[in-house]
Image 1 (cartoon, rainbow, N blue to C red):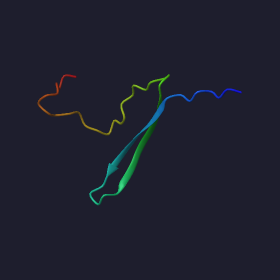
Image 2: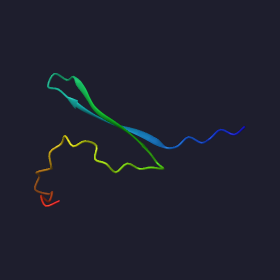
Image 3: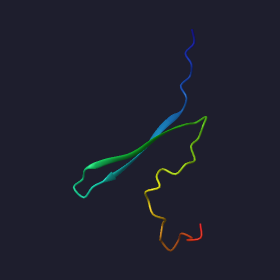
Image 4: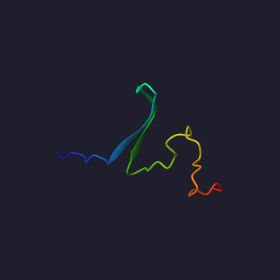
Length: 57
């Protein structure tokens, strides 16, 4: 009996690190090659304010 090939997949995890160094888990998203996930990692981050980024995006 042939084994089914495993699908390519990865889990993206988002953490926050406190000033004391403690890691706080915020989210985890599993992404597979057959169904890519295009959602942003998290809406917790503010828009980039560096001069290279266009604020109209």
